[in-house]
Image (tube, rainbow, N blue to C red; front, side, top):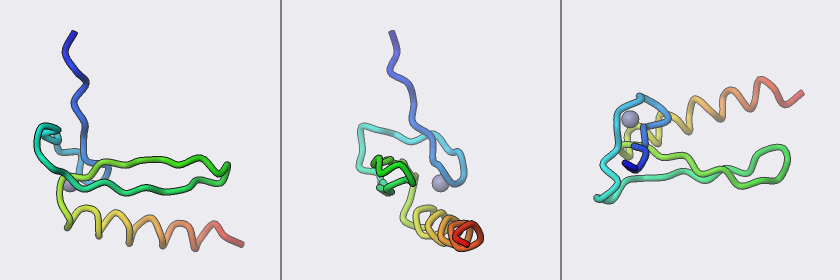
Length: 60
Ligand SMILES: [Zn+2]
């Protein structure tokens, strides 16, 4: 059975899991730790920025 390929949470590009790739860990509203895979530091930064603006919108 082939291993499922990871995809970048931000741009959707396939991630080569045999090489280093950035991840982001986020604690969700239930207190569970979620791990998101990203293809590059640029995507991680962009994803973080997008996510934090969404969190701000929902916070009140
Ligand atoms: Zn990406």
